[in-house]
Structures are given as structure tokens and as C-alpha cells.
Length: 199
Image (cartoon, rainbow, N blue to C red; front, side):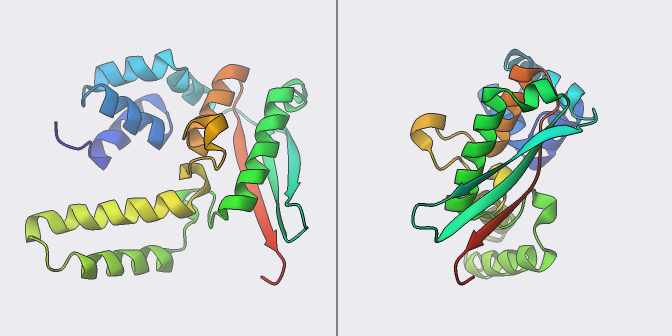
């Protein structure tokens, strides 16, 4: 089967409101069948989470992580709809684990839209140069793949949680979507900051 295109992922996201990685995983699992992918997303609670995505979030928590030795740390704000969920163990633990992840993984941006245009352009230029000796019909795919890999490394929501034993290689977006499904509320990673001595 051919690779899932960005256009197919976007179409599924538009229909379900699921996160990009969840939509891509569902399409891969369903071998490109959009209807089956929707069923997969609904079964995982990720499609229904989309309906909550537009709801107002006025509650939440701010959590921190300071690495032993005090050389670096992180601060993160996670928002939800009710103070009941904001005070729940699962919600607070997610925020704490996310602060730890941010301190360790040093993301550059919260979402793809937050990646500076000049950084994207630089990565595209580098990938284009690296693909120059490849057949012309595959160069665009190579560039797209390298840009995607770069975004996986620097965008918080696309990163896999650093605690792979606990989270089985799931991305931050997948963990956020699961928490939203489990709590029945819109869960938003609002902002973060990472600090390191000397930076």
C-alpha cells in the first residue's frame, strides 16, 4: 500500500477533528480507508474529543519540573473546562509528566504553526540540497519526509514522550487526546517555558 498523504490526513482531521498523528495512525491502520479510520478514531474516543475541542477552557493547572542539580527545568500550563478535572490526579499527573518531558526534550514550539518560518525554510533548503542527486520524481517526497522528521523533533505536540516505558512511544498529542477522552473535557496545552542555566 502507498504511503498516506498529507491531504488524506487533513481530510480525515477535518471530518473528525482528531489530532494529526491520531488521524495518520488510523489511516495507516485502516490501509487508507477513511470510513474505517473514522471507526478506529471513534473507538479510541479521539473523534468525539474533537467535538469538545471548541469548548471554552477556563480552569487548569500550572506545573513545574526542576532537574536534580537545578541546571534546567520547565513550566507548563494545561487548561480544561472544570475545576473538578483540573484538580484530578490524572490531569495533574499529565501536567507534571509534560513538564518533565519539556525539560528533557527541549521542544522549540508548541504546535507546527508556532515553528518560525525561517526555521522551516532552512530545513526545506537543506533537505532539497540533500535530495538533489535523487531521481526528480521522489525529491518532493524526500523533502516532505525530512521536514516531517524535523517537526517531530522540535514541535512539542508531535514529540514522543521521553518516558517511553510509561507511555509506549505515544506522542504528546496522543496523550492529550486520551486525557480529553478519559475526562470528557476539552484539554488544551496552553503554553510552556524551558529554562537552562547559561542559556
